Every structure is written in C-alpha cells, then in structure tokens.
Image 1 (cartoon, rainbow, N blue to C red):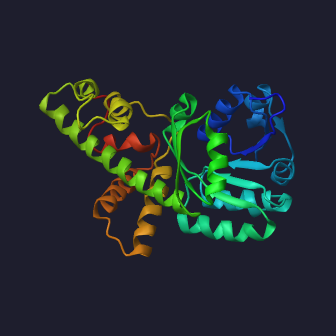
Image 2 (cartoon, rainbow, N blue to C red; image 1 turned 120 degrees about the vertical axis):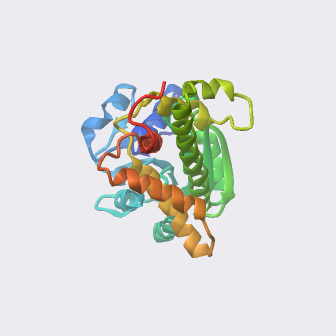
Image 3 (tube, rainbow, N blue to C red; image 1 turned 60 degrees about the vertical axis):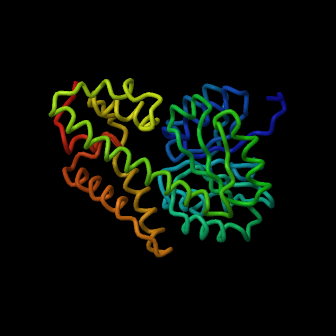
Length: 295
C-alpha cells in the first residue's frame, strides 16, 4: 500500500466490520472512522485510524465509504439520520454497504441517496470474521460494473473474491440465497448429530470422517464442531439469522417463489427465540435436540 494512499471511510466496527477494518489496516490502508459509541473505536485508533465526530464528516473526507452495520434500519439511520452520510455527500463518492439487508430496501435507499451525487454498491459478505481475517471472504456485489471494480481493488486484503451479481440489490438477493442454504445445512446437521448421538456415534468425528466427501463444507468443519461441543458464543444471536432468512422469505413473496424448506428453517429459529435465549447464533439449533456437549 503506497504511503500516500487515500483514506477509506469506515462505519460499523462490530464483529464483521471490525475484522474487515483490521485486515485493511494490516495492509497499510489509512482509515477514517465514526461510530455511535466512540469508546468502541479504540482498537482501530490504536492501529492508526482517525476518528471524526459525525458520519457526514466521513463522507466529506473520503472518496469511498464502507458501511457494515446490523440491519436496514441501522443503514438508513447512518446514511440519512442527523449528520449522516447523506449530509456530507459529495459528487461521485462511492458508498459500499457490506451489511446484509433486504434487497428491495437496498434499492430504495440507493435511489434516495442518488440525488446527492453519491453512488451505492450493496456488497454483503459470507465467511464470517474468521474469513475476513484470513482474507477469504466471498463478496456478492450489486451496482454499476465500474463501482464493483473499484470495490474489488479495495477488498483485496479481506476478500478471496468479489463477484458482480447485477444492479443494486442483486448482492443482497444473492446473500439471501446464501443464507437460505446455510440455514438449511445447519438445521439438517443439528438433526443428524442429535440422532447420531442417541445411537452412540462419536459425533465430533463427523468433520474429520466426511472431509473431502460430498457432505463436506465450511458448515461441517466449523458449525458442526461447535454444535457437538456446545460452544455457543454469547455475542452471537439467532436474531441475525432470522433477519436474513426473513429477507429471503420477503423476496420469495415478491417474486412469487415457494420456499418450503426455508420456511421450515425459519420456524426452527423462531422456536429457539421463543425460549428467551437467543445466544449461540446459527448453531443454537442443536439445543432443539440436545442439552449439552454431544461428545
């Protein structure tokens, strides 16, 4: 990274956004950051990032602003709220939204921002914070080809690939499909290891036993290991997965598609949510079949 590299704006230094920003900084990329809780920015400031007082100032000072927040309401608040990105918009500034939100909402927000002269690329990611730190994230991008090309150069430190899926909203639609598949895979593995445990199988052996076979996947190698060991991260919540699956169900209704498997997966996550304990995120589905570690 050249010493005179232009700073990137970054808003949303949570689990995923923080890992992406960390990877950018490791490559020497200067960052200008803002957060609703300034005290949470400390780790990135210690690595050289510059903090500003408003999201508007981020947009005023950067040609590209990366955003990675929890949901569509948070995106709208950061972009269009008081002293938000739109208030500091400059002609031809690029907004890259790494958040996972409803694809139709993404299009509406992009249309709303367009009169300011800013451009919008929706670019949700898959691979988790582990993938970000390893530089292997899959980025599904929606927007103009030239803007996705700019993103590909920016994302090189944290992404294994950036794929242009179509116009604005297409990245979010692709992410909804991604979450449908992950949700279904986690759900069936929870069933499978719950049954296998009752039979007496050492379920912790599944990742090694099936490695390289057709059932092998990142879900098997990560999520199944954590389900077997009942390792539930308290910072994770099923609410994130329910939000993503709901986006897929909304997309299905709009397009006249049927999603019977995805509807069933949603009902399982809602069953977990009804217990009042949503910690554990995606892998918490194993709680429907076991009370503790299975090995």
